[in-house]
Image (cartoon, rainbow, N blue to C red; front, side, top):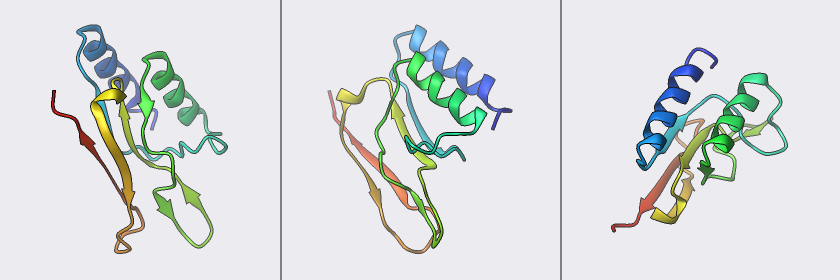
Length: 106
């Protein structure tokens, strides 16, 4: 995960500096459940999101196994007022659930 951190940080900071809306989605391979963020790279990621005023819209686990529940798949934005709703859709054909959101039209 550390390999992409400088690239992600640079992209987010450049977009935010230009006043652009930022939406980050995907599997970041970092458990972002509040009580489970223990790895250094995951803590750095959460610190980046906090420093850039980014909000994680997904709050429930997105990967559920017999032995664990983790929040790996994210929907993060610097403008949550533009998002009408966000969900985790349980599909049961993958070990990851699908995350999605509905963005408001302005």
